[in-house]
Amino acid sequence: QLQLVESGGDLVQPGGSLKLSCAVSGFTVEDYAIAWFRQAPGKERDPVACISSVGDTMKYLYSYDRPRFTISRDNVKNTVYLEMTDAKPEDSAVYFCGTGQRKWCSSSRWTYNDWGQGTQVTVSS
Image 1: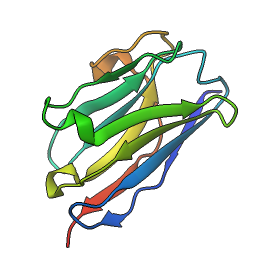
Image 2 (image 1 turned 90 degrees about the horizontal axis):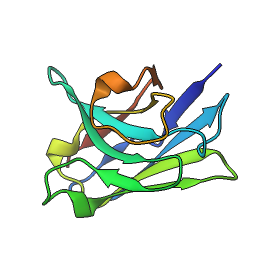
Image 3 (image 1 turned 180 degrees about the vertical axis):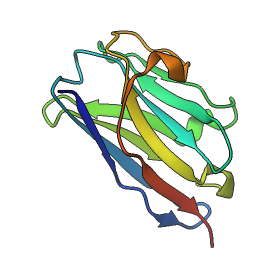
Image 4 (image 1 turned 45 degrees about the horizontal axis):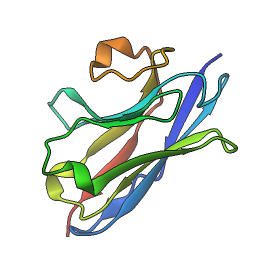
């Protein structure tokens, strides 16, 4: 059974940094692409970044936001990370990791059918 568990969400001040974790079980991070999405209240679930089965990374935010986010993984810990720097209030959302049991990344949430429960990130002073 595939399982993804997010952690690391917190209240962070504007300009601060945060590192989210997505621990997976039932498969390895080298089997499938894993993506991070985020969803603010009343908004769609939007893609943030993805790492493919071979370790290629993609970022899906506006170009001016991309440098603030880094996706990475630890094959030994079977965990994918999303690091955020220079946090902004508009980054506040529930962050989800998901997999669609595909090797390559996609920006469409409909290609991902296994999700974690999400972790709340709030950026506020």
